[in-house]
Length: 514
Image (cartoon, rainbow, N blue to C red; front, side, top):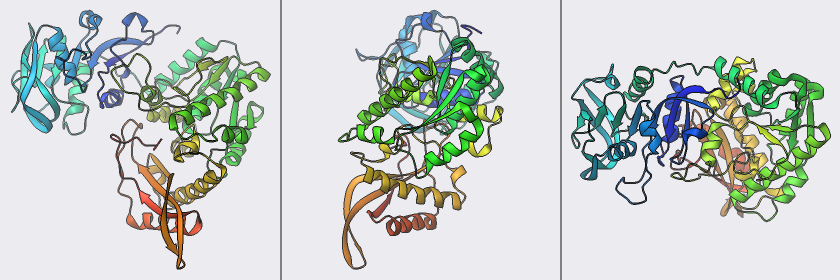
């Protein structure tokens, strides 16, 4: 298994807000893929057997001096290349064609009409509704290219040079493109000849083999939070190395009400002597004193976790730390090779880790999205209640408290959170939603209760629907449920006198406020 590569698609990110969505759509077609930046060199690739390449859209114009360019090796690599929006324009320009600013911009829904048959249009209607988002257009095609489809504003809506290079001016990855999944399936299956083998049994098998290869006979400690990701990691590594694994739960004081006690009871029963509970709540909360910046909070918390784990590892004699890092964490935190995209935020287990660590990391889920981690857990027999548990951030309530984290604010938010989760579960919405939580804002407002003036905190409710946290929408929660939650909060948590509801999707917002 050593140095084995998984067949799949390489996605070059030119800074598009949809690059992660492209990855999701590819994975939904049971095909492995990875996202990287323009600085990526193929000789450094040790995980992906590249069967095809997708060039994402992006905010730049190809004729700008500082616009990102396609790496030269891609044009000569010999696998099919699909350029989307900016990716198409960069491909055409890079192969000798011409791109110009369009006199008519296209944003939103448009119709394309087929001009010539091509495998990319297999099973697709003669006229198809697509989603455009561009202000430039291909004016002159590169040698060997032909126009396959047109729209009202461009004669080069889809272009191709055989099956080697294909360009789409629209975005097949968004739901507004009615037959978008068919376009991507045609590229992946018909043109790239991918086998669609990225299935739960296969990625569990691959993850276990990679852990065995990396760890050998050494000991591993697993950062176990009781959430989906860390529980799946614990199961994977236990299958790989059995008795050489110790799972450690750290009470950092930033967890939900009664959470440490519940987790301890569950995993002491499940893991016995292989489970260790460490109370470091005072240490974590004290380290956040006076800290208001969310990035600094994440880095402090990530560093504190490592301190605790390294101390535990010394006593156990472990060389490795296992954690539940997901691909969405990696992509959102941004590795240094993705310069054309902005870092959204550091995740405490990626960008929040200290630069120098004694422990070597083991991250079996590093190339999986959340739904894939859940499928892996189901494949290994984890309980439904655990598999369907909503995500909870590694930094805990610290990033749901705007401004400085104090013991008093933690107590307020824990009590609010208890009410929110309780009502959502009682009304049958918990498993329907991706995430349900409250944010304690740093704002206070005037209120009146019992004919007396109050000046108390504002709490924001945040409910979202998602598949993998890369994008998220806001559900239409029945008004009666929202009203009951609000009434309970202001009646039962005396430090709060106002409740608001966040209806922002992702993008433009993120799921968490910090």
